[in-house]
Length: 187
Image 1: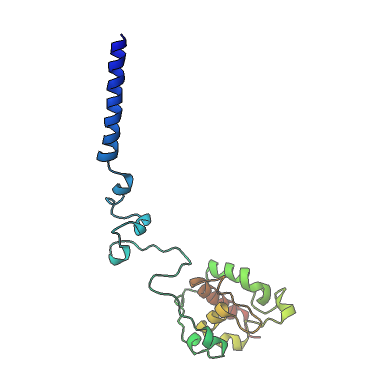
Image 2 (image 1 turned 90 degrees about the vertical axis):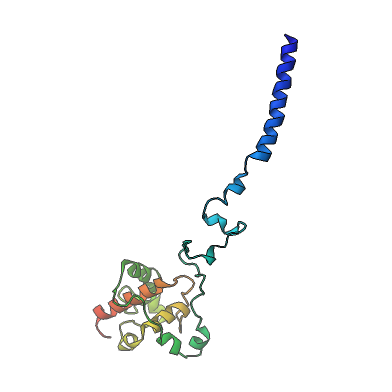
């Protein structure tokens, strides 16, 4: 019986030793298997993967990020010196859509504290600071790009909101302001 145990122990040891060799030498690593799959988001840092060189790989960017093709231009230098030419030439990509629930929410989150819920400049803080009404003929004459630039860079006593409200959200506010102006008459 002890002889059988010794044989069994030697057989188990041999199997274990050859099993380790098989596992480490013959079975591919999961890291190597990742290269067989056509595309994972995590593969951007893997070897031999150049995702932006091919047109068939999806480019799903996260909301609020800068696109890989560049960023929105910066006209702050012109804006701060009173040159509104760049701002006036901006085109509202949401023209004709009207105000949305997003524009309403953003306006009431960031703007109504000063400009009031209807844009008349009678918000809680606006009364103390002297926030202008958005319903005047002068405010109605501003281009959409000008209003967009005021939101982005601020002007006068209004601080810049470009770091809080980004991209198309600014246009949503512009459209909501236009709706308020259409409904509010003239002041």
